[in-house]
Amino acid sequence: PQALSADAPLPAWVANKCNLAAVTMRSLDGEAVTEIQLIDGSVSLHDPATGRKLSPISAETAKSVALRAWTGPRTTIESARLVDEPVGTEFRGPFPAWQVTYGDEASTRIYVDASSGTVGAARSDTWRLFDFIWGLHIMDWTQRDRINSWWLLLFGIGGTVMALSGFVLLANRMPRLRVRKR
Image 1 (cartoon, helix red, strand yellow):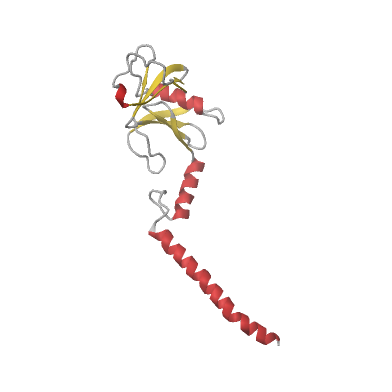
Image 2 (cartoon, rainbow, N blue to C red):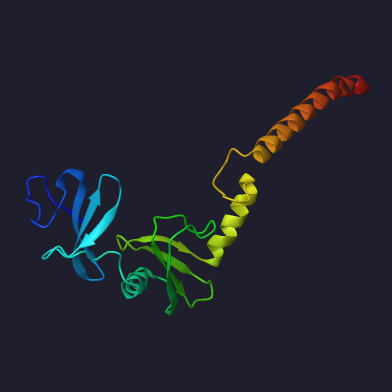
């Protein structure tokens, strides 16, 4: 991506210049596009010459972006579907996004942002196993991102009490060991 310099004039078709956060020229699927990001965080893609809005991108463009991002063994794309809300713990945004599913052994899915055409996440069976184990580790079985659950606090306090009681028992046993040796 190449950000336009502060001195460079904006294209005439850019409207509402007071709400702009960034204007960037970049490539999407081998074609030049202008990415406009507003202060509220929304992103849109435009044709650099005419200003015609290109986002949300099509399913075919999302598939092409996903194929370019693929680095694994040769495979095919089984499907692409537009998702508008979180997909379990697998992907949480930004939305709308294209969920591109590959036909590989790991059931890989790549999420492509429909507004910007960027890859948001890549998920496979290995990642799903890691995510499950991570949820067990932090004891958050639903969202898997809260590390301050009451379960974790309860087990942490319990572990600390057990460790301290072990030290107390060890300290109480030490004088008896010294007496027996004499």
